[in-house]
Image 1 (tube, one colour):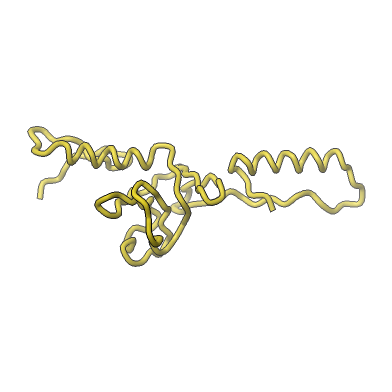
Image 2: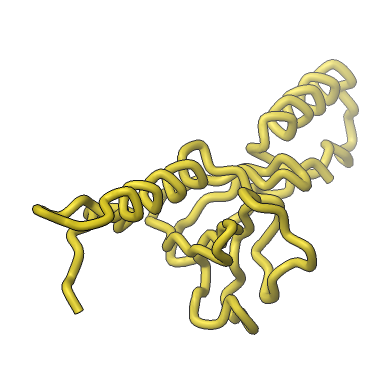
Length: 150
């Protein structure tokens, strides 16, 4: 089997010299780019594929996947007309999880969700202006997917 050239970051297939059926390689690269550019995933990390996926939808595969996702831990699973395609994550990669709008990051070999921050409470002197300012800040950071408010 001939080893096809690929890009160093995401292993996108490159066209080979005098390659037959260049459209296959080109279309595969475009499919991966379509999923990874400003990555948005339906949900995840998940261990098992969803029932009834629609072409073009993506999910983050969990650390111990099963079934058709076996052996693809932490990858982004892309549903295409030909079945599942998988893109391995890179350190620092980000993806928006559509179920809650969280900005997930791939760091330290795993997908990390934003930290959960609770609203201010407690203390012997209550400063309502400070509490309102902090609550508003938490609300806006959560709206940007940078925090999960509790």
